[in-house]
Amino acid sequence: MPAGTGPAPEEPRTEASDAMGFFEHLEELRRRLIYCLAGVVLCVILAVVFWQEIYAVLSVPILRALEGMGEEPQLVFTGPLVPIKFALQVGLYAGLFLAAPIIFWQLWLFVAPGLYRHERRYVLPFVIFSSGLFMLGSYFAHRVVLPITTRFLLHFGSALFQPLITINEYFSLWLTMVLWMGIVFELPVAIFILSWIGVVTPGFLLHYLRHAILGIAIAAALITPTTDVFTMAVFGVPMVALYVVGIGVSWLVQWRRRVRRAAAEVSSQTEANQ
Image (cartoon, rainbow, N blue to C red):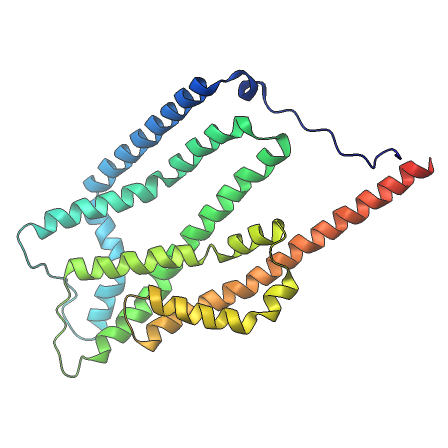
Protein backbone atom coordinates (compact mmCIF):
# COMPACT_ATOMS: atom_id res chain seq x y z
CA MET A 1 0.00 0.00 0.00
CA PRO A 2 1.48 3.37 -0.96
CA ALA A 3 2.43 5.71 1.78
CA GLY A 4 -0.30 8.08 2.86
CA THR A 5 -3.20 5.94 1.58
CA GLY A 6 -3.76 3.96 4.75
CA PRO A 7 -6.13 4.99 7.52
CA ALA A 8 -5.02 7.91 9.61
CA PRO A 9 -3.94 7.02 13.14
CA GLU A 10 -6.55 7.69 15.77
CA GLU A 11 -5.96 10.85 17.76
CA PRO A 12 -5.43 10.22 21.45
CA ARG A 13 -8.01 11.54 23.82
CA THR A 14 -7.07 13.64 26.78
CA GLU A 15 -5.37 12.04 29.76
CA ALA A 16 -8.19 13.18 32.03
CA SER A 17 -10.70 11.25 29.94
CA ASP A 18 -8.56 8.09 30.00
CA ALA A 19 -7.98 8.33 33.74
CA MET A 20 -11.60 8.90 34.68
CA GLY A 21 -13.71 5.84 35.35
CA PHE A 22 -17.49 5.42 35.42
CA PHE A 23 -17.98 6.79 38.93
CA GLU A 24 -15.58 9.63 38.26
CA HIS A 25 -17.71 10.60 35.24
CA LEU A 26 -20.82 10.51 37.41
CA GLU A 27 -19.12 12.72 39.97
CA GLU A 28 -18.09 15.14 37.22
CA LEU A 29 -21.66 15.17 35.90
CA ARG A 30 -23.00 15.87 39.39
CA ARG A 31 -20.60 18.77 39.82
CA ARG A 32 -21.54 20.32 36.47
CA LEU A 33 -25.26 19.95 37.23
CA ILE A 34 -24.76 21.66 40.58
CA TYR A 35 -22.96 24.54 38.87
CA CYS A 36 -25.78 24.79 36.30
CA LEU A 37 -28.43 24.76 39.01
CA ALA A 38 -26.58 27.39 41.03
CA GLY A 39 -26.26 29.59 37.96
CA VAL A 40 -29.96 29.22 37.12
CA VAL A 41 -31.05 29.99 40.70
CA LEU A 42 -28.81 33.06 40.85
CA CYS A 43 -30.04 34.36 37.49
CA VAL A 44 -33.70 33.71 38.38
CA ILE A 45 -33.35 35.59 41.67
CA LEU A 46 -31.67 38.46 39.83
CA ALA A 47 -34.43 38.51 37.21
CA VAL A 48 -37.19 38.46 39.84
CA VAL A 49 -35.59 41.43 41.59
CA PHE A 50 -35.57 43.39 38.31
CA TRP A 51 -38.81 42.00 36.87
CA GLN A 52 -40.31 45.47 36.42
CA GLU A 53 -37.38 46.60 34.28
CA ILE A 54 -37.64 43.38 32.24
CA TYR A 55 -41.38 43.90 31.80
CA ALA A 56 -40.74 47.45 30.62
CA VAL A 57 -38.68 46.00 27.75
CA LEU A 58 -41.04 43.12 26.94
CA SER A 59 -44.14 45.31 26.83
CA VAL A 60 -42.81 47.85 24.33
CA PRO A 61 -44.47 46.28 21.21
CA ILE A 62 -47.98 46.04 22.67
CA LEU A 63 -47.88 49.42 24.44
CA ARG A 64 -46.73 51.19 21.28
CA ALA A 65 -49.48 49.44 19.30
CA LEU A 66 -52.09 50.58 21.82
CA GLU A 67 -50.71 54.10 21.83
CA GLY A 68 -50.80 54.18 18.03
CA MET A 69 -54.53 53.37 18.19
CA GLY A 70 -55.18 56.22 20.59
CA GLU A 71 -55.77 53.83 23.50
CA GLU A 72 -54.21 54.04 26.94
CA PRO A 73 -50.83 52.25 26.76
CA GLN A 74 -51.39 49.94 29.72
CA LEU A 75 -52.16 46.25 30.20
CA VAL A 76 -54.62 44.90 32.78
CA PHE A 77 -54.89 41.90 35.10
CA THR A 78 -58.00 40.00 36.15
CA GLY A 79 -57.14 38.62 39.57
CA PRO A 80 -55.36 39.71 42.78
CA LEU A 81 -52.66 37.04 42.46
CA VAL A 82 -51.91 37.65 38.77
CA PRO A 83 -49.20 40.33 39.26
CA ILE A 84 -47.24 38.11 41.68
CA LYS A 85 -47.53 35.08 39.39
CA PHE A 86 -46.54 37.22 36.44
CA ALA A 87 -43.47 38.59 38.24
CA LEU A 88 -42.37 35.02 39.06
CA GLN A 89 -42.97 33.88 35.47
CA VAL A 90 -40.96 36.76 34.07
CA GLY A 91 -38.18 36.07 36.56
CA LEU A 92 -38.14 32.35 35.75
CA TYR A 93 -37.99 32.68 31.96
CA ALA A 94 -35.62 35.63 32.00
CA GLY A 95 -33.39 33.81 34.49
CA LEU A 96 -33.25 30.73 32.28
CA PHE A 97 -32.35 32.92 29.33
CA LEU A 98 -29.60 34.68 31.29
CA ALA A 99 -28.28 31.36 32.60
CA ALA A 100 -28.03 29.82 29.11
CA PRO A 101 -24.33 30.76 28.66
CA ILE A 102 -23.54 29.16 32.03
CA ILE A 103 -25.40 25.97 31.09
CA PHE A 104 -23.67 25.77 27.69
CA TRP A 105 -20.28 26.40 29.28
CA GLN A 106 -20.75 23.67 31.89
CA LEU A 107 -21.92 21.28 29.18
CA TRP A 108 -18.81 22.10 27.19
CA LEU A 109 -16.55 21.50 30.21
CA PHE A 110 -18.22 18.11 30.75
CA VAL A 111 -17.93 16.77 27.20
CA ALA A 112 -14.62 18.40 26.17
CA PRO A 113 -12.29 15.91 27.93
CA GLY A 114 -13.86 13.00 26.01
CA LEU A 115 -13.45 14.56 22.56
CA TYR A 116 -10.61 14.34 20.08
CA ARG A 117 -8.56 17.42 19.40
CA HIS A 118 -10.21 18.14 16.03
CA GLU A 119 -13.65 17.62 17.59
CA ARG A 120 -12.97 20.10 20.40
CA ARG A 121 -11.95 22.64 17.76
CA TYR A 122 -15.43 22.60 16.22
CA VAL A 123 -17.76 22.11 19.19
CA LEU A 124 -17.22 25.44 20.92
CA PRO A 125 -17.71 27.58 17.77
CA PHE A 126 -20.78 25.49 16.99
CA VAL A 127 -22.28 26.18 20.43
CA ILE A 128 -21.51 29.90 20.15
CA PHE A 129 -22.92 30.12 16.62
CA SER A 130 -26.13 28.22 17.41
CA SER A 131 -26.69 30.25 20.59
CA GLY A 132 -26.09 33.46 18.67
CA LEU A 133 -28.65 32.48 16.03
CA PHE A 134 -31.23 31.70 18.70
CA MET A 135 -30.71 35.08 20.35
CA LEU A 136 -30.80 36.79 16.95
CA GLY A 137 -34.11 35.10 16.17
CA SER A 138 -35.54 36.09 19.54
CA TYR A 139 -34.41 39.69 19.04
CA PHE A 140 -35.90 39.72 15.53
CA ALA A 141 -39.23 38.48 16.92
CA HIS A 142 -39.27 41.15 19.62
CA ARG A 143 -38.17 44.07 17.46
CA VAL A 144 -39.82 43.23 14.11
CA VAL A 145 -42.35 40.40 14.25
CA LEU A 146 -44.20 41.35 17.45
CA PRO A 147 -44.72 45.05 16.60
CA ILE A 148 -46.12 44.17 13.16
CA THR A 149 -48.29 41.37 14.51
CA THR A 150 -49.69 43.29 17.48
CA ARG A 151 -50.58 46.31 15.33
CA PHE A 152 -52.37 44.08 12.83
CA LEU A 153 -54.26 42.10 15.46
CA LEU A 154 -55.37 45.16 17.42
CA HIS A 155 -56.51 47.08 14.34
CA PHE A 156 -58.39 44.07 12.98
CA GLY A 157 -61.40 44.49 15.29
CA SER A 158 -60.83 48.01 16.56
CA ALA A 159 -63.91 49.36 14.73
CA LEU A 160 -66.19 47.02 16.68
CA PHE A 161 -64.43 46.20 19.93
CA GLN A 162 -62.56 47.94 22.73
CA PRO A 163 -59.11 46.34 23.29
CA LEU A 164 -58.56 45.15 26.85
CA ILE A 165 -55.33 43.11 26.87
CA THR A 166 -54.30 41.21 29.99
CA ILE A 167 -50.68 40.77 30.95
CA ASN A 168 -51.03 36.97 30.83
CA GLU A 169 -52.41 37.01 27.29
CA TYR A 170 -49.69 39.28 26.02
CA PHE A 171 -46.88 37.46 27.80
CA SER A 172 -48.10 34.14 26.37
CA LEU A 173 -48.10 35.67 22.87
CA TRP A 174 -44.66 37.21 23.40
CA LEU A 175 -43.13 34.02 24.76
CA THR A 176 -44.60 31.86 21.99
CA MET A 177 -43.41 34.08 19.17
CA VAL A 178 -39.97 34.80 20.61
CA LEU A 179 -39.30 31.16 21.45
CA TRP A 180 -40.43 29.81 18.09
CA MET A 181 -38.61 32.48 16.12
CA GLY A 182 -35.43 31.62 18.00
CA ILE A 183 -35.92 27.96 17.08
CA VAL A 184 -36.69 28.89 13.45
CA PHE A 185 -33.36 30.73 13.21
CA GLU A 186 -31.62 27.42 13.98
CA LEU A 187 -32.61 26.14 10.50
CA PRO A 188 -29.20 26.94 8.91
CA VAL A 189 -27.51 25.05 11.77
CA ALA A 190 -29.73 22.01 11.17
CA ILE A 191 -28.97 22.13 7.44
CA PHE A 192 -25.25 22.46 8.21
CA ILE A 193 -25.33 19.31 10.35
CA LEU A 194 -27.30 17.34 7.76
CA SER A 195 -24.92 18.49 5.01
CA TRP A 196 -21.86 17.68 7.14
CA ILE A 197 -22.97 14.08 7.67
CA GLY A 198 -24.01 13.75 4.03
CA VAL A 199 -27.77 13.48 4.42
CA VAL A 200 -28.58 16.48 2.19
CA THR A 201 -26.79 18.33 -0.62
CA PRO A 202 -27.34 21.78 -2.19
CA GLY A 203 -28.88 20.14 -5.24
CA PHE A 204 -31.26 18.15 -3.07
CA LEU A 205 -32.34 21.24 -1.12
CA LEU A 206 -32.81 23.27 -4.30
CA HIS A 207 -34.76 20.49 -6.02
CA TYR A 208 -37.22 20.26 -3.13
CA LEU A 209 -37.56 24.02 -2.61
CA ARG A 210 -41.25 24.03 -3.53
CA HIS A 211 -41.92 21.13 -1.16
CA ALA A 212 -39.99 22.98 1.55
CA ILE A 213 -42.12 26.10 1.05
CA LEU A 214 -45.26 23.99 1.46
CA GLY A 215 -43.83 22.38 4.61
CA ILE A 216 -42.86 25.81 5.96
CA ALA A 217 -46.41 27.10 5.36
CA ILE A 218 -47.81 24.13 7.31
CA ALA A 219 -45.27 24.61 10.10
CA ALA A 220 -46.07 28.33 10.31
CA ALA A 221 -49.77 27.50 10.60
CA LEU A 222 -49.04 25.09 13.45
CA ILE A 223 -46.69 27.26 15.50
CA THR A 224 -48.37 30.65 15.17
CA PRO A 225 -50.59 31.53 18.14
CA THR A 226 -53.27 32.93 15.83
CA THR A 227 -54.93 31.57 12.69
CA ASP A 228 -54.73 34.61 10.42
CA VAL A 229 -52.75 34.49 7.20
CA PHE A 230 -50.82 37.67 8.04
CA THR A 231 -49.23 36.25 11.19
CA MET A 232 -48.41 32.98 9.42
CA ALA A 233 -46.71 34.97 6.66
CA VAL A 234 -44.68 36.87 9.26
CA PHE A 235 -43.36 33.50 10.46
CA GLY A 236 -43.16 31.83 7.05
CA VAL A 237 -41.21 34.44 5.07
CA PRO A 238 -38.16 34.40 7.42
CA MET A 239 -38.25 30.59 7.38
CA VAL A 240 -38.09 30.54 3.57
CA ALA A 241 -35.23 33.07 3.64
CA LEU A 242 -33.37 30.93 6.20
CA TYR A 243 -33.92 27.84 4.03
CA VAL A 244 -32.27 29.67 1.12
CA VAL A 245 -29.40 30.65 3.43
CA GLY A 246 -29.18 26.97 4.40
CA ILE A 247 -28.71 26.06 0.73
CA GLY A 248 -25.71 28.39 0.66
CA VAL A 249 -24.38 26.83 3.87
CA SER A 250 -24.76 23.35 2.37
CA TRP A 251 -22.90 24.48 -0.75
CA LEU A 252 -20.02 25.79 1.39
CA VAL A 253 -19.83 22.48 3.26
CA GLN A 254 -19.72 20.53 0.00
CA TRP A 255 -17.19 22.92 -1.54
CA ARG A 256 -14.90 22.60 1.50
CA ARG A 257 -15.18 18.83 1.33
CA ARG A 258 -14.20 18.83 -2.36
CA VAL A 259 -11.21 21.07 -1.64
CA ARG A 260 -10.01 18.78 1.15
CA ARG A 261 -10.50 15.68 -1.00
CA ALA A 262 -8.54 17.25 -3.87
CA ALA A 263 -5.74 18.29 -1.51
CA ALA A 264 -5.60 14.79 -0.03
CA GLU A 265 -5.41 13.23 -3.52
CA VAL A 266 -2.62 15.60 -4.56
CA SER A 267 -0.71 14.83 -1.36
CA SER A 268 -1.22 11.09 -1.86
CA GLN A 269 0.00 11.21 -5.46
CA THR A 270 3.02 13.29 -4.44
CA GLU A 271 4.01 10.81 -1.77
CA ALA A 272 3.46 7.88 -4.13
CA ASN A 273 5.73 9.43 -6.78
CA GLN A 274 8.55 10.02 -4.33
